[in-house]
Image (cartoon, rainbow, N blue to C red; front, side):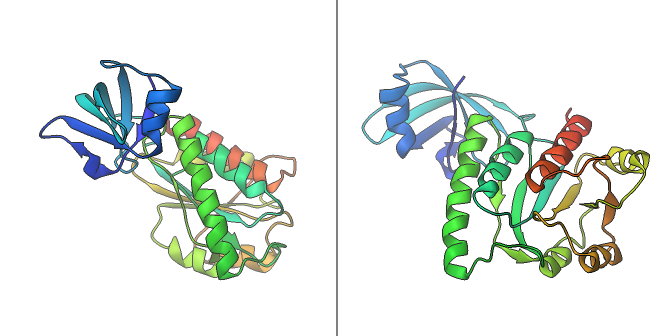
Length: 248
């Protein structure tokens, strides 16, 4: 079943009507060549629910659907995982966003740390975030997510630590952290309904002072094993572990 995203106001529960507009209209009519009565899934990108519908009408600007059922337990993880990603070089951020969205991340916040080679001014950051958000949306559609994960504005490391003060679990992979069993205990403590922050350093990792600053703010150091992982691999690893533990 093909899935499409709409705005919440395009779903009318009372009349059991959903209206798709924009570029998806052409995709449904001319690319997929869908017919009346065929079923599609629709998500509003916010509540994680999946709305199963049947096509009842089409014109040049819209596709009208009849709402058949609402699936409350959609494809989302029961906990919100937010990755604070140290700005990487080249186009690595695009891969990081794409794959973490596939794995179930709730949102990604680009983060400027002391060892970041990439520096973004406001103009460049705005253009990058717009592009990154488009990649997140495409990955959400491909993986049939119930929401479109948001790409936040660039934060400094200090701002990010302040932002997560009230999160339930705060993690920082650290190459000098030891005892994989302790890491297992920390991750296995994750529960439904929690907000989980994960701090990923750039290519050069975090400076010792940054790690200490994080520890002082209640962030827990974890190990990702005996090997040193690239910045893009570290986030995938944690998301995979959390997906395995939280998926219900």
